[in-house]
Image (cartoon, rainbow, N blue to C red; front, top):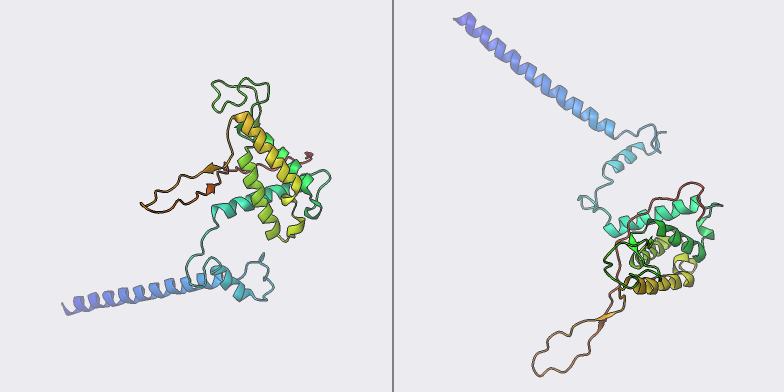
Length: 241
């Protein structure tokens, strides 16, 4: 009995020792993985060893704010503005001849806006169409699809802001050129007549006043009629504006 008990105790002791060694190996492997994550990869800017440790540590916390919380993702407006800016840059690169941003003018912005019409989804009736001025046509017609005025107006606003955010001077901003403003006004008036849609300002209803209070003049609200702009694919290589 004494021999059997000693063998059982020895087996338990060896099992405990092996468990401890196994846990140590696991912890050592985890520490090795963490240290490898902080080492710059061959393609990183600091692969020569200069600033490698700080680069790895900063990349590990690049998505964290100073308070330790995850930084918020860009808003829908900022994401759309970045996509619009990239699309316009691709259009300039595919222009024949290629056009730099410094040489871009209001005329080139108009070319870009007219180019986008081929991707439009808004039916704009021609003057000879029987449904001209009909907001809800009862039947299909061969009139072309165009970019809605609200989409173009919102697009120009985002690109105007992106131009200055990317180093452009406000006085040279081609998206704020007078020709662009006149073009948007013409598109608005034409689509208003062709589609039978009013883009005029609408008066807000007066709020109820308590008895004895004086009349308060009402303010006009702006119904801009904007539509969501969908990103357009970049122009095919070699396509002229």
